[in-house]
Amino acid sequence: MRWDFASVFSNTDALLAGAAGTLRIFAICLVLGLSLGLVVGLARYSTRRVFYLPASAFMEFFRNTPVLVQILWFYFAFPMLVPFEISPLAAATLGISLNSAAFSAEIFRGGIQSIERGQWEAARALGMTTAQAMRRVILPQAVRRMLPALTNRGIEIFKMSTLASAVAYVELLQQGKLIASLNYNPIEAYTVIALIFFVLLYPLVQATYALERRLRRAD
Image (cartoon, rainbow, N blue to C red; front, side, top):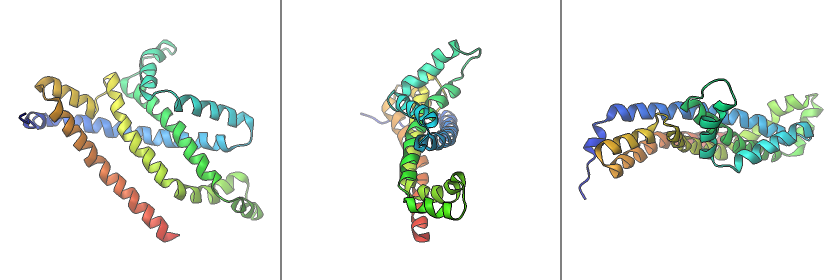
């Protein structure tokens, strides 16, 4: 077999456009997924059924259905229920963000639950409300314990961005498919896509590891 990477790198503009699309959807889904995950996690931790039951239903549904099916449903079925069209970016963002929120919620709930009851009692003894204790005492400690799990969640979100190609959103895998179909070199095209993902992800992961080490030294 003769490798033909030159034909892949001759489409640099397509690769750059795909990388920009991947980073765009990653940033959106990371913020939405973790933010909504925190809200759902707090509701899941609550002892009030009015919060706990909807949060539990949300988590169970989105954790137990495939992300790809969710993206396709938002793209093809959701426009039948609302009076406007759903773009490929919006459909992929909804599917990935809601799925990530369901998994992140359990991370947040577990992290909050891992904090000793004495911390709650100490905060209340200082006159803090439950919301103040959560914001000032519990969450700062819980986030340190959750950081490795949240890092893995971020990596999964980054890799799940490739599922957006199912609705023709312009991201790296979609551009790789285009290059492979034009030059008949799928092995080289997908190898380059994998390497680009590694180059983009590796610094982010290492930065997170550095943050974990810094937090441990601070403790």
